[in-house]
Length: 281
Image (tube, rainbow, N blue to C red; front, side, top):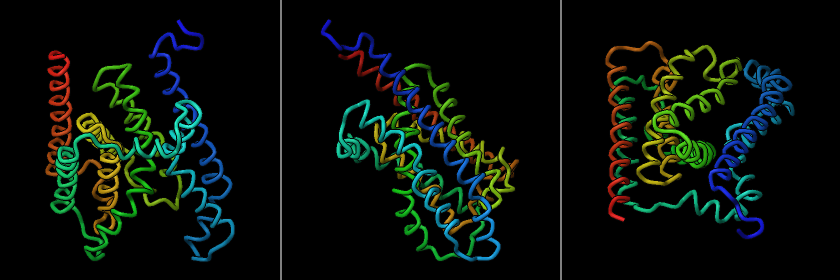
């Protein structure tokens, strides 16, 4: 064995996984202390008075630059210092799509499922429809890429190497859900006062859907597009009533079950196809 060679590739997988989780924990702790402890008073004051202060501007800047992009920042650090690749190569990996037609059909199909759910059971918030595509374009970099670079770009694939489906999806969902927890104790958050159980169920369904999209397409940007589209629905519908409500009506729960089933079917179909291809090699 050459000097400096890695004896077991699984050790690298484990190292990347634990380093990612450590970075998420450190960055999340920083955001919690600054946003939910030190600067929360400025956010509350702004929502009560509408007066912009230096404290609130700092609060907003940390939220924009460090809170939501925590998964992206963690992957950026790992890419530069562990994987030893450039920022350009990292973005190339994010946008890499093997089969564009297949990826578009699968991602578009799940986006249509989300839109139909909103149209059937959602309450319009009064905004014009053109706000949906505008919100969608804004959400792609600031939410989709900011989060999915980490959750489906690194965490889900690394867990898949170490545990069977659906356990890897459940663990990803649990971590993703826990990462969102501070918004439930922030009185200025739009989730404050909503059902954490309802949101948890939505996170679980999206975790299966996004895992299936990534499994079938191997495309991070496809997951980012889907994630961004679901969030952009809030531009024209009451997002919280759609996705945070619990227990919800029988009809909405049946539709959610269909949503979840579609994700599981796609995952299983992709897994069977991969095994057939391996058998032919």
